[in-house]
Amino acid sequence: MPVDYFPRQAGWVAVGLVLMVISMSIDYHVLLDLSVVLYVLGLASLVGVLAFGVAHGGAANWMKIGGFQFQPSEFAKIATGLFLARYLAGLNLKVLELRHIVIGAAIVLLPMVLVAVEPDMGGAAMYAPLMMGMLLVAGIRVRLLVTAAVIGLVLVTGIWTFGMKGYQRQRVLTFLAPETDPLGAGYQVRQSKIAVGSGELVGKGYMQGTQSQLRFLPARHTDFILSVLAEEWGFLGVAAVLGLYAIYITSATRIAIRARDRAGILLVVGLISITCFHVLYNSAMVVGFLPITGIPLPFLSYGGSFTMINFISVGIILGVDIRRYVNR
Image 1 (tube, rainbow, N blue to C red):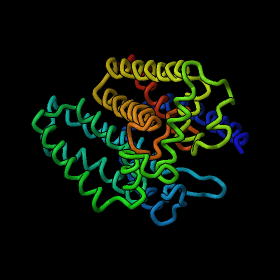
Image 2 (image 1 turned 180 degrees about the vertical axis):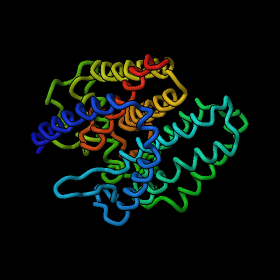
Image 3 (image 1 turned 45 degrees about the horizontal axis):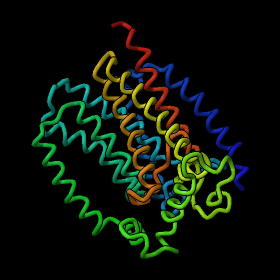
Image 4 (image 1 turned 120 degrees about the vertical axis):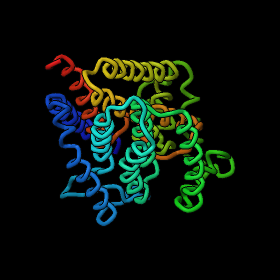
């Protein structure tokens, strides 16, 4: 029942706040020193999911221990970011050489492929902004960017042909032409557009949205939470929430600029790149600009693992800012 979501999410937020304080209290250099161990544990958990994972929404991307379920892919993102930041910072180069870029990409692609095999294409896609944001800040020549774009196009073609299941290709085809399957694969995006459009300027009011309250809108508490917000609070409500995200991202960017060392800069950039991509993709997805891939909205979508990881990321970012004054 919908009423069950609030106490559970409130509990996860409380745990997330505790984890935020803990991660903020730990020197990020200690986390970087432990990054290899954390990275290996992250890979092991992803391999464990392939063998013992619990399926949700067509993907076996959950681990269950007793009555507790969590997504290892979310925690592996943090470990991967820490390891990549440590590697790139240790190079201390203004412009990366090709072999350094290949090694950096391999650090990210290994967990990314494991997540894609689950199969969880949305979760795997979240590793891409982490990699691109950190590599760009670390320094890449323009010709290498062009080469990477060509390789990426080839990879996308290969993934479409050999790496995607039928229902995943159908999601993309439905995105391109949702009217071809209005009651099947195109149902979600159609209902989302109706919810967003019906909110108009100020919305219908709290708990007054027909698409969400009458359950026409699937996954309204997770992937399509922004559609619910748009229906109940209208354009102004959505603008206010997106404005808060803009403030958060801008503040994190300032922290990256004034970080005390290269490792801190790279770490913050990687974490905010993930948040930026989540917000941009989810916002575009609910209005039909991008295919539906199950990418939630940070701090708003229902979910324990994702909520806790968001708060841990905030704690790490704040920890980088706090320690810019230490032993400078």
